Length: 263
Image 1 (cartoon, rainbow, N blue to C red):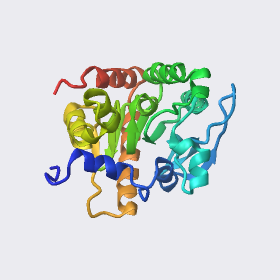
Image 2 (cartoon, one colour):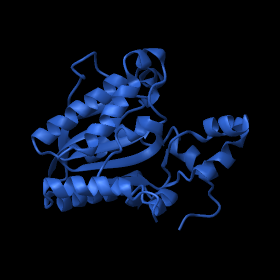
Image 3 (cartoon, rainbow, N blue to C red):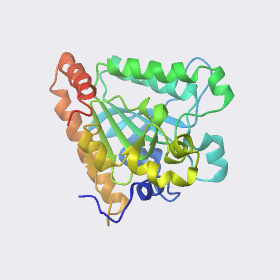
Image 4 (spheres, rainbow, N blue to C red):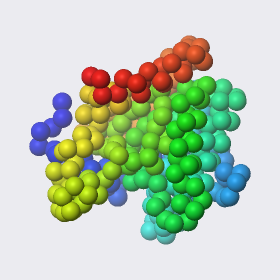
């Protein structure tokens, strides 16, 4: 059960914490023999998306993670983890490669959203996100997505069309930030805590709505404990889906999104 003393806005602040491991950080903790692959084969390489191939446990996987960086210089280079169209196209390129070689795809989500700069719009930000949503729904290989921090808007959903979505206890997953929501609804960003409660973006609420399938507890646990449970869970979910036919895999993913909100 969720601690009644911890508000939804407290969860948002925790998800954004500078000391919290990034999505890329969790990817590195869980993935062995990682080989990073670069570029979208159209324009360039986006450092806000780190992707490649490696092993999680005994499973050969394609891993894709949002990376905000560690130092201020690195964070600026990575646009604080906000991907550009090249990042989403790189991710999709590797997903299609995974499908070809029958490798499961594991996505690690942790970003406030897609990069909002004019250059990203000029290069087709909206189209890149939409193409990921479309293609991921029909990807003929298992897809597991993990929300480790702030999962913001379509920028996060572009890596979230999965057979199974798991969230850490203090992560959030939302169509909009509470500050932006408060500004739109009440013309007052100070009402962000009220917006956070209304958005129902905590892991507990999203589990109830059927948006996610698993919540990984964080309270009084070390990062190593969390990573170990996450690793076991991902391996288990991959093994379950290795027994499915391609048709069963696609039906599961389709039905997951059809039933959201029906609970």
